[in-house]
Length: 226
Image (cartoon, rainbow, N blue to C red; front, side, top):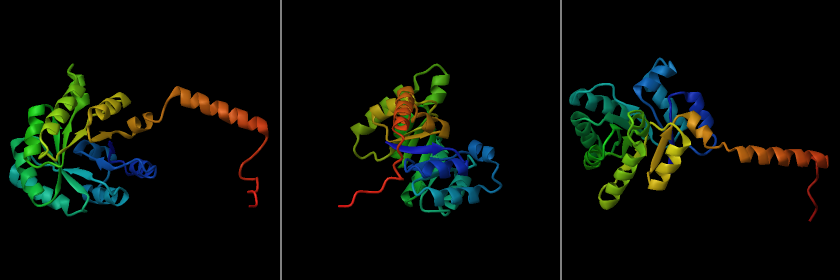
């Protein structure tokens, strides 16, 4: 499973990229606004310099003509830009045109398996079903991931990757991975939660305490001559 971080905070992106665990980035207008960056284009360019994998940059309009122009403009920022469009008739039309030109497209705001089929037929690189928002409505968001993965697996001609979005916790990540989802995009806080386990902390504390009792240091000891 690929890990994308869902943020427009360049500092978080740099830190997570340095771990080698980050495969891409997703942004949206809300995250960009939260970042406080004065230039959306410059921000996306900076992110693309840090992360070599796909970086989703979303169009701001809703009509076909303007979305297509915006998408083509965004695609020129860097080769790893994935233009993000909404799952609407106009958005899927834009997806078709851009994907035909070789541009990566992330179709976002997917809430049903039927919508995911349309995204795949339109040539989307990624489709982004929102599990957390479905959970908020009392529905089972993860069941949608299972449906989409099953349907896509039935049709080898579908090359669209399932990008699980609106992830709220590590369970969303692990369950999506078990179902065969290709990508999980999550806030930096959830990525950091994946590291955590009480037994890891407890075991490490014991190792450190036991090592301290030896009175030794590793770096001060010369290597043996062979």
